[in-house]
Length: 421
Image (cartoon, rainbow, N blue to C red; front, side, top):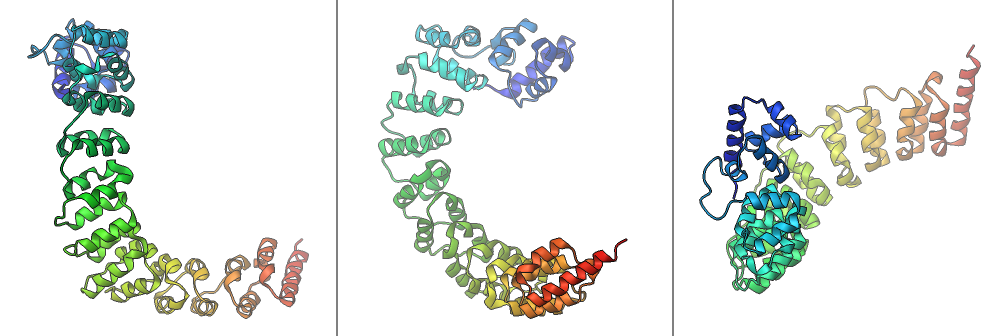
């Protein structure tokens, strides 16, 4: 395969010998100077069309550029093959069939080719000329369909897990699973399933069931979690008692275990596991309120009201005492507005009474109106100055106000407007 850093260093050497700047070379090749810079740093390679022009600029053969000015140590020169692919890709495939070039040379220059060009070349080549090793080396540059066709053509009869791992990132789950079933004659190890899980799709569960029974780590579980079904993940934990997760560990897999996380959290607490606030935040959406309360009780730090606001959707109204306790350390009107939908009406009234400063305008009360007891709503409205009443607030409050209170509010509003010049 090509060495991008060696090629880049040689291009840099040629440019400097020609006393050209990167900008001047870029202008000659009709590319950006950033592209030239990336070539010279070995971060990318010129495409085949540009490579042909680059060779002309420096009066070099394409082989000299690709091999850093050194002689190629195997096969025929790739100049003819590159030039054919730059002009008419299909003729390059015909050249391989005629023995004018080899599949090995195609493999060498594959990093320079667009996927569409490589597809046109390979479809013209007699598939009998490909070996499995060729296909493995070309896999990163081929589209899925062409790769599948080549794998079918080379008729792989036996493969090991190393070969499967080389092909896995570049083929689709169906082809990969079929290849494993027809060519690999030994069950996978757990580590092999973990490594292949991102590429096996819905087949991951089946291969995990087939895997050799061996000791697992928490890292294995975390790696598998996004790719297996919930019941498979739960069974994996049950089958591997050597896995002893901490609360922090469970926070990483809770999105995949959902409410099956509850007993695991309880077990971790029973073992005396430490609890951090960030872990509670991560676990809250996936555990029930009783488990969440158990975590809060184990937390070795005071919980601020603003922190509980984040947990409000998950605590439930049976645990309002946590809000009342935290309110003693201070809260804002926005905090109350945010917890209002999740606490009892009586709790909401107590929280409002605990505020150092009450609401200052009708709109603030309108935000809470759907969740307040009618008496509390009337009490709050009575303290609002007339200059803090506006039609939008009354529209929002109207469905929740008693008729008598609504009349008083309208009277205040009319008085306010009559006082205007």
